[in-house]
Image (cartoon, rainbow, N blue to C red; front, side, top):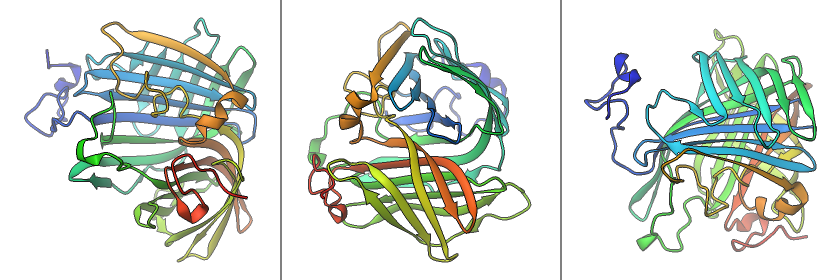
Length: 366
């Protein structure tokens, strides 16, 4: 049955029920992403939940990273009513849209639990739309917004527990929807050997208290910038956002890896020079569905019954493969006397010859 509880609200944009997207593209998705950190190198938690209406699937994960351990709770089920944001122990509750959201992971057999509430500290930023076509096929057509906030609640693993208070614990979130590669891998056809997103990816949303800076860049191996953002967002909603100018990056690479020691980002129109230091890595590509493993991908059908799984890895055992995916870090950021904390996210996918990555397996040279 297509009719669901959300069809009672006047929010339709086509003649379809809310359950059915306006597009028949199998890759249509609708996702939440949050990160949580204590402005330190102690722990970083990342949470995601997605719906894939044309695949009939909903899934989500909680990934908790420390210096030694990487723990993941993940869940999947047939989609059903799209107003249902609960997947096994994992749930999102929208308490006040764009202002307050509760994220929980009920205690489970793997000893992981979380009950936290996110309160927005700044208005949402409408990020640039991403549109990519490869060999005639639209592979990305997505819209998203980003927002900074503070956390309150509790987080625990078998190794430790944390009292989460808003004076110390912050994080960013993004909401995105549209078309991107999801579900079971499609046949490449004419796109054999063509990478969807080869090159460099940077995403640094940073909280400086009364403002944030959101820097984002996707650059191909050929130097084409297919997505770019460099915006200062003020906590005061009456102050307009500021475009900081074309961002230029300098990354301090770690030889023999695809990891970074730090970065300097320069914004051309504002003379801002932002120094960026990663404090703690979370290898979020491992176990969560971002494409490293063949048996669990975002939107991948896991069977007719709900499924919940728990994973535990030592960081030393996964960083060798995890560095080839997207890597999130707690980051410390400084410019002109301002000190902030936020997400330091990078990916070097396939070739990026500017930094000595001449093939998919290459690592940074000495």
